[in-house]
Amino acid sequence: MKYKIINLSIFFLAPISALPSAQANEIICPSSITIKSAHLDIDNLPDDWIVSEKKDALLLLDGFGVYSDNPAKKIQQKPDAGIIDGKEHQTTWNVNTTYDQGGSWVSCDYNYGEVNLIKKIATTMKSCWEIDSMDQFDRLHITLKCSTSELQEVK
Image (cartoon, rainbow, N blue to C red):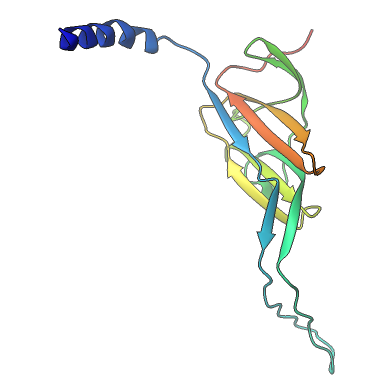
């Protein structure tokens, strides 16, 4: 008897799960990263000078951006207020538009842009919004949430 009940529940629930709905994607920037010191090769090092070795460094998240194409191309998008999935957000972006030939990307920035972690936004996403906060140690936390829904203007 249990077998029939399970089969019936799958039979009735499967069509419900296939209904269209807005899907979300979330990208969380690490609030800090540790970098290992690398040996620097300096071409024009003056005689009698040597490069000081640095210790490993903890870098804190201090910036964030959404880009058309790879962030190395420096095509950063300007955020604007908008409505996504029926909710108003102050910092939103249209992503993966016809103008974003290389897709849309996010960059998490550390030590004033000295180090950038970049990640491509899923091509199925159409709009994104930012959520940021500070923790008890005053460290910045940034999350980019994206949706398959189109961005709507605030009227």
